[in-house]
Image (tube, rainbow, N blue to C red):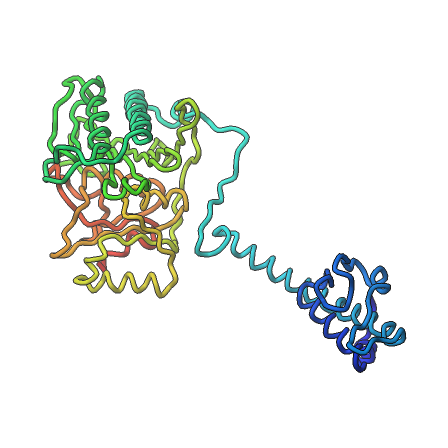
Amino acid sequence: LKCSKREIKGQIKMTGSSKSLVAGAACAVACGGASLAFVPGLVPASSTVSSPSASQGHLRAGSASGSSSATGSMAAPAAASLLALGAVGAGRRRGAARVARRADEAFGASHTSFYTDAVAKDSYETIESVMEKKLKDPKVKGMVNELLAACVKITEALRVNLVTVNDSSNTFGDVQLTVDVIADDLLWDLAKTSPLVYEASSEEEPEIVKTNPDGQFVLCWDPLDGSSIVDNNWAVGTIVGVWDKSTGLLGATGNDQVMSLVVLYGPRTTAFMTLDDGVYEFTLGPGNKWICSRERIEISKDCKIFAPANLRAAQEVDGYAKLIDHYMTNKYTLRYSGGLVPDVCQQFTKKQGVFCNPTSKASPAKLRLAFEAAPFGRLVEMAGGKTSDGVTGESVLKVKIESVDQRCALAIGSAHEGGPLHPML
């Protein structure tokens, strides 16, 4: 369509029914310019305008007193001209929308949703194939296989057992759930029968138990982290730290771990573990076979996702209150479930994020260094993130384990967030 502005103005200089046609055409343009089916008096309801030449026979001016053929012949080019201008404007709007969508694609559908960017592959490596190349120590490889086998059993138990209160309580007097006890029993069965486990300790009973004098490793586990949310059917997980018997647990640090492993039980069961060259994710597939779903995970230095635990401490710790305000003012996305495993594991899938759990006099530390902070610290730091003990600002992996049940504050995540948080906390 080639129409000059003068021609368009000339066509708009109409009276009566012609003006109503132009108004109707303008409405059509505003609605996209492709169809006039819903503009009263213009075309039959079943008609769709594909081009001006095809539509001129249907375009007509409508008014209470009727219309003239001359007016109709003038109105059709006017409507076509307006539609042409609308098409140009719509094209520009579509171009701007495409630019905006490309900007949003970095974080999925929008800057606050953070949808996955994972692309399906034609095939996935098995865990056996990956460990053959990425885990050289045969004993560590054997330990991983035994731990994952136990976690498969925990997965199956979670699928069929109701979440109810158990008759007993743990060492701290906390009420135990049936699923807590089942998960803990399965891991103790492993520890007491494995030729690889020298000593073991559970968060449910934090004391070191000698299991096999010829064993090689010391295991520390939280059998089912997230007991307070498991009845909601939210994601929970198993956390395991593995030390060599040459260092033992007491007197060692998180840096002395041979490897660490976290298994997340959600709609799928996924395991995040440290291999020789980084952090890998394995997904439990058909036939209870593990496949490698992410390799060499890297957490970006910057992030826009935060998971603030122990918010009660913000009432006493001014720095924490300022930190929360910083996140909100700068429009970070809140992603916090109250479960340590999903709240930290999102850093591996979203490739960014920060989790912080400071302490105060009224809200003391709850996280166990050996059972939770150290295993997660090894995973996050091997993926390029940073950790802080929340007090000195040093890496949580440098904190000496002086008692089995030692507690600590924790900030962990993207390097520009997880490391420098301690001045505020």
